Image (cartoon, rainbow, N blue to C red; front, side):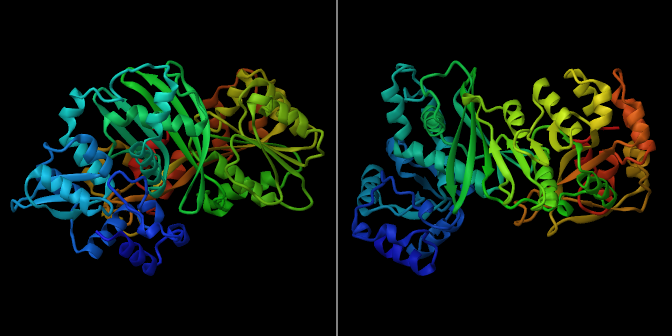
Length: 557
């Protein structure tokens, strides 16, 4: 394969990220199977699109994972390292033709070496790197289980030089980069890397649901974890204790903040990487999913000169997005707004935003104390994590400041008992809290493939939830189907389902030291509050989501 001509072809197509990076004789450099050049990373293409371009340019057959795995593996005479490092997969197709699948351009020496080992000519084919890795993992599984490779054999747990050398190896670097790029391309929020005995499981959380993806071989596990630790500034020799760290990467011109958390398990050290897209535009208040009535309640609270707005929900339920949208509503030159966050996910011009730094003593509580000396009008606290922060926040709301914060509770009404448990007096909460927003995120049906479905009497009789929520036979609902746009899932993106508990006269009188969340919710519903389940059902009837999706994230009947 002529690498310089292929590079020229990519340049003509306008898909090279930095064409100048290949100038100055780089086109004439020798690219071998062990090269550290990240071919796909040099382009603006996905792995699949790059493989299409490669196959079309060199007039090779384009194959997928099914064709690789479905053929007969013919690489037993070649070393596993040679195949993995070069991303090569020799196989015999259904017609009996011996082929060599490649993911990047390879030189003639590599092809000849393969032909010498296989003792016959090979036809070149093109597959994506992840498809070749998956096929190799399947075909070499038995060998991996028996081989005394680096990642399987404990060879000096405290040998930091060995671990660093392993982490810096080209295949390891490429494998981790591919996983991170895959997670970003698929709109993932979390990347899970989990070793289980002789296999390495990689999953990506997309729209709140985990999905398995092709994984590197288990022999790379230790190297990938060490590489991830180096990026996050963690101790690579410590594998007995959990560790947390941060890193930054750039993918497709976008800066991604990585939150890395490692955990020792029986199968080896696992890691979860949260991906936070820096500089991404925040969602407007009328786009987060609030009903018209709930949006009016929220805007009324934001117009108040003082008091507290609490947004509740579990981790990953969109609380930060709702707060950012709320801040954008009140972001005026006449108001000084200060925030303390962990981390700063949305950068909003005109707002003074600070990120916590516990190692130097900058916590939510310490920052909040300092904020009160900065003459603020509005204060946003990323999370009420402890009693001290909660006390300072409540007193700030009582002394002429509008305070916005989040709390981890199941319902909006549950926020009051939770704060009482944190040591706050009920009469202070009754005086300071103006509104509590409870929320979850439901997956939105793909607008390109959703299909309508007419409910039958038999379906309603079989599932009591339909009748309980007022669905009738003949009513139209929508169901997922799956297409290329949504990746065959049937859903794309998420919207919030909300309940907004406005603290009116009855609710304020009901708040006491022994108030129960269920009793408080009953009072709030008498004052006109719509629950998350009811809001989700309305979105179901509007064709935005499904009833199963609503009950997956809200309280079931």
